Length: 87
Image 1: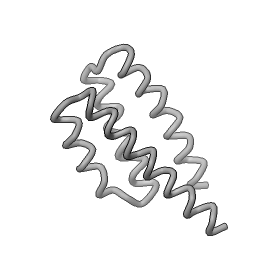
Image 2: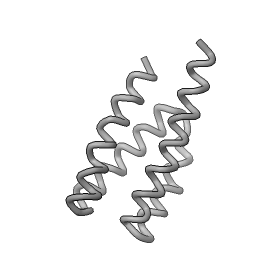
Image 3: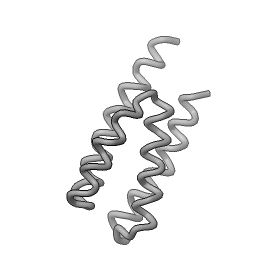
Image 4: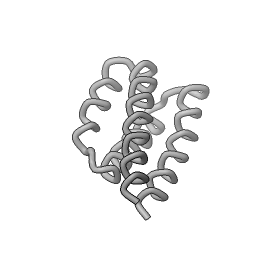
């Protein structure tokens, strides 16, 4: 089910985000985060949002992560709300 997949990816994203914020934003973690952002946005049908997040990550990694996570959280909440109400 799509909702389960989004929640699974979000859980992995939270784990990586904690690593990034508390352990440092090395290139490997940043690439994994970008891949997860892409995969989640593809799952929720909003692939256009990835470009905006990637631009914010290029400007300032730490602030970009915080911005990206905040926006993604809102987008996932909206997706879940719509899916649950459709059921």
